[in-house]
Amino acid sequence: MIDFAKQFEYVEKKSRFLGFLLFCKNLDEIQNVLEFLRQQHKKCTHICYAYSLSSPFAEKAVDDGEPSGTAGKPILSVMQKRGVKNACVFVVRYFGGIKLGAGGLVRAYTKVTSELLREL
Image 1 (cartoon, helix red, strand yellow):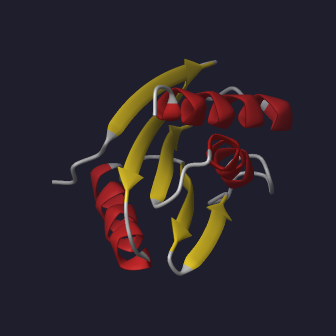
Image 2 (cartoon, one colour; image 1 turned 180 degrees about the vertical axis):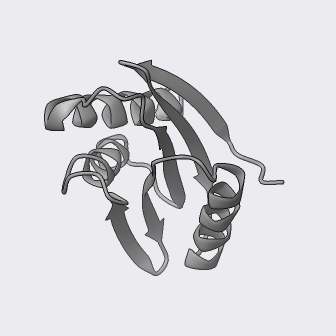
């Protein structure tokens, strides 16, 4: 079982977005959590994420099949604006049958990340 710092669920046009915040120190932790989430959410459509590590410095945004720049980049952007380091935000999406469009996806991933990082 993974000890997430925070979790948040958001529903937009029948798509479920499950957000998870993990404070971490290295890429191995991030990979282990990603594998855990893939096992726990086998029927999900996407697991998008972004991380920011300070030592050594590393940042990455992953769209996991969403249109380019509509998931990982918005997650990372919120993290950067809030100055969050040594953390990873994962967002598990279950497609609800209604396309959200690029703008809708950006808004959804931004909202989930903003809620996870609120009060930090």
